[in-house]
Image (tube, rainbow, N blue to C red; front, side):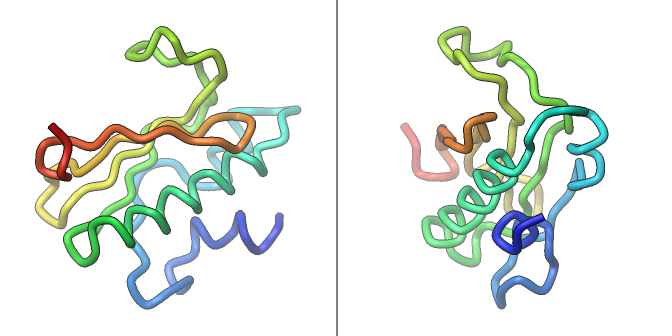
Length: 117
């Protein structure tokens, strides 16, 4: 696996690295046999970096909500398979929800606590 994809799951990747909960790289690989999961791991890495910039020390947790790439049930317009990510405070308040797509792109929805409307 590339070092970029590994960073998303490394607790030593940066001084402000978010605590990761939920699925692991091994889980994602096991649940998606035959698929190239590198792009989705890179998307998770970008989601983390963007969240750290956007929310600063307020963001404490990156939660990977399941390992299997799947069609979104909440966003019917989402054409690609996704893994859902949430960014949370230390106390569990959700700041944003993100989709890491199979092609390596991502989308984000801020919550009210995260600065959304």
